Amino acid sequence: MSLNEQLYPGHQFDAKWRSLVFPAGYKNPKPKPRYHLVIIGAGPAGLVTAIAAAGLGANVALIEKQAMGGDCLNVGCVPSKALLEYTAAQNNDIQFGAAFAWLRQVRASIAEHDSVDRYSESGVDVFLGPASFADASTVRVGDLSLNARRSVIATGAHASLPPVPGLVDCQPLTNETIFELREQPQRLAIIGAGPIGCELAQVFARLGTEVTIIERSDRIMPTEHTEASTIVARSLEQCGVQLYLDADIKQAARRGDAIEIDLGAKTITADELLVAAGRRTNIANLNLEAANVTVDQRGLIIVDKKLRTSNKRIFAAGDVCSRAQFTHNADAQARIVVQNALFAPTATTDKLVIPHCTYTNPEVAQVGSLAAELDSRSVGYDSYRIAFSELDRGKAQADKDGFAEVLTAKDGDKILGATVVGHDAGEQIAPICIAMNNQLGLGSFAKTILPYPTRAEYIRRLADQANRRRLTPAISQAMRAWFKWTR
View 1 (spheres, rainbow, N blue to C red):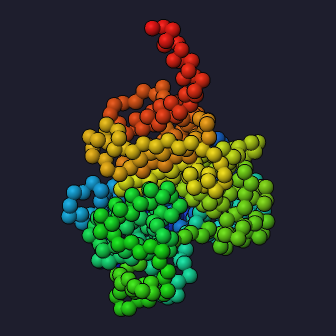
View 2 (cartoon, one colour):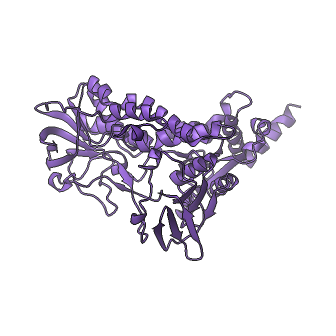
View 3 (tube, rainbow, N blue to C red):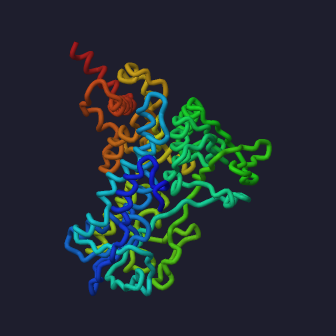
């Protein structure tokens, strides 16, 4: 790489980052005669499995072919949230170079936790290079063979392109390449209005780029609460983002330095095109057939509730086998794998409660079921809701949008799902997640004492609503009689 190529905002942090997650000149260790666990993939699932198993005293090998930390550290959660936080904190005149230098600095600082050195010092044999199964108990990496008592596939997933004519020739950006930009695009088109598309639309709009979102559904964030979708759409439009919904892309083509996206009645012209519309599992070249591991039609590795594949000696965890493709889900599954692969296979995914959050402004956090899902399954429920503008903290900060909604079993207390939209929604939904994981009902929060004034007060207000609703006519009559008698 030439000197001119190296000199860009944050280049020194990128150099540090790369030296930590995939150091140049690294020599793989000599394999042990046999490993308790051979783990393929050093994303969140693989990293948690490896360090937990090694900490228990197991012989562990960890194989990574691209970069320790996987998508989350390198091309996902960390860089995107760094940009979101930086651009939200600046009042005006936000500089593209400074923002991207910040993401590179943050990524480099966090990379220390996922580094080759840290895992090697923790007793994990780290092998860098592509892996494949030679048979059910042998994993090859380069010219080395690793003998495994148990294996774990944690190779994750990657961005995929929709079948749009001409799209590949446009060389579109994905989450795997957009954070390597060194110059600001003046016009950015985004295909897909899910979490990645909406978050990055807001980032680039704040930076002054003209942003257009193209979504085939009739609303952005189509899998979220309908009102949450409406609120975030309004926020994006206020940032200057143009939304083309219910859109059918006919073709895409590069015309000189520009890219044209044909929607039939409208043609969108952009300097760069970001595709944020789907993912596929990283299973190519693993030679799963040699290990008798099967996949479904979507390419997900098939696992049971104990995360065992069709070969019970081989486990899978994270995005490679799960529809819920979140870092925290991968972490939870890794803990199950450690128990089941090293000891008695007693841990299951049955009771996992997996929330998720989109970090736009406002944030959208959700856990459990939405009302539409319960309706589709004919499940009865009660709904409790409060707008943040009704809370004293919301009034003090002039909250106009945002709400919390909790669904409970019909005439009962069990929490079936919750949605929070607003400032720090990902933080605000935490008590609901704790309650659902510990089988606590909504009413149990009525006794909780919270600092005043905070948005977290919503949970106690909703609990009071639930308890009042369960005040049956018989109880009301008894209380009236008591107060009449005690006058």
